[in-house]
Image 1 (tube, rainbow, N blue to C red):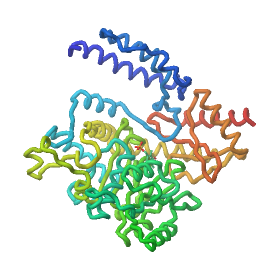
Image 2: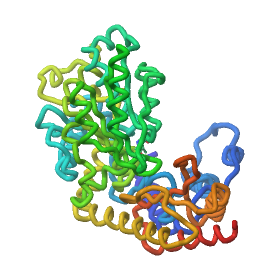
Image 3: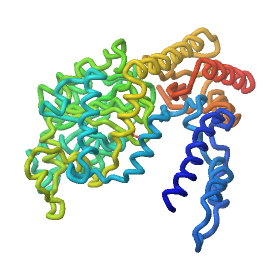
Image 4: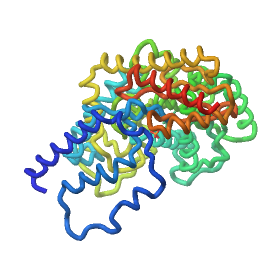
Length: 470
Ligand SMILES: *Cc1c(COP(=O)(O)O)cnc(C)c1O
């Protein structure tokens, strides 16, 4: 493809994307296809000769769109937001265009330095502890996902606890990790991958609001120590996936501090709320943590993938991850004056993700971002007030920010019917969880273009579905 043809077709693709956003509300939010239907429509083998670009775009319309669940629809209320924005999309385009591989500072200095800079901006923007700044002993790095950040936290914690011996000889089976029974499944996955063993992950009890009970953690730590085990890692969650519960970080940090246990804080979705000073109380005690992560790719208008991972002691993380083969040796690295982000995560290669984040922050400004976050929280609180006022429905958990967990009082079956019905209608998308062994519907508000009218219509759909299912 020549630059001339790219210029022409590339503009057509941008037009296509703009058109898509203009009409995204007209599609059924949840893809309505049967398993295997999309594959069955694709040609059986790869083309022998190249095809015209136009025919690929026709097939995107005809074959791919029907199999898309429209995460960017303002009527998407499932799981958690994975919102995006035009500035972010353009940042992704430039990143693809530059095609940079940012594994070392030397392989593209701007890729590394912009990342360090934007992550320092975010420390100020979210009022994170100063120890996470690159100018202190810590620092931040962009990872693909919160799952990988948590894995890196487990690995760095494992090495600290064993004085880097487990990197040399493997784990001795004495290490024990802790998180709440409501924590994200990625913690269990990280513990498995890190060789700790799932049996050595303790799921600590939660209170009536689904937050970890510090006294239950303390008791479990004492039992494990008495049994000759080595507690090494605690993961707390700010905004659990199921119900947006906030673990009491300060009380837990105190317990970890007494025993030199690594404290990781997973704020994947809710961390973004700290852009607004009025929601920053969720950070209480964060200055006592060893690592923290949140996902701009969830609620901060930044395309998947983009997770920001911060550590208080970057040397510990680097010592855990670093391996230096001859072919990566270079003068800049040896001078010690540069950051090589390949030593901050599992994989070697890395995309230029800071560009989209830089674009989002500069385009909206802190005030613009705050405006949208406040709006989403207001909409969720309004929805919660409708639930509270309706005799047939009840809230199933506190709704501190933008997620409302609620249920019809009529039992699991009717809630399942409501969800199936609204999702099959295509008008909106809703997902569920289980709390206290009851099926609970989750209204997650955070798509970039969701407005009051979308939330009003969703509530109307839900009530109509309830009436039809009763
Ligand atoms: C969504 C979520 C995750 C997983 O996020 P990925 O970036 O997809 O790995 C982890 N923890 C919490 C609390 C989440 O909400």
